[in-house]
Amino acid sequence: LLVGALICEVPKLQQHKVCDDGFYGAGCTEQCHCRDGPCDRITGLCNENELCEPGWTGPMCQDGMNS
Image: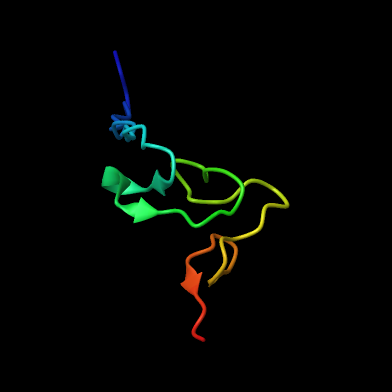
């Protein structure tokens, strides 16, 4: 006899496509601008202590600098 049985739905784990070097995000549509190597293929973050390509700034090197 079950009293107060709990039914839970577990969401499906989101599957990520493995992006090519230099791209990240859903559908691999976001481009990385890390200077010395590819960014993380899911988050877009550059490797620790890595600089951005010339003309780009920000923690993910996604902010273009205006001249």
